[in-house]
Length: 78
View 1 (cartoon, rainbow, N blue to C red):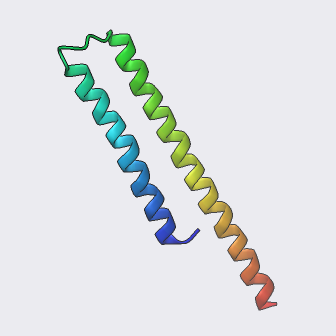
View 2 (view 1 turned 60 degrees about the vertical axis):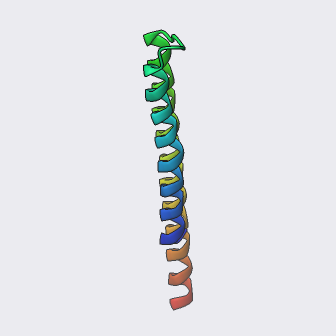
């Protein structure tokens, strides 16, 4: 995974999870819909856990591809 791909995936993650979190803040302050505090915090913890899993996967695949490209360059050099 090159640098541009990782930047794009990070930007997509920021937009998706940031928007999701912003939605939870807006819905919590909406007076016409009554959510319990537990429901709002459960939703926010779900968003955070999904974001952590997403960014760990991006990190894992970036690390895996950099090792693969490094091993290919070493085999070409010898």
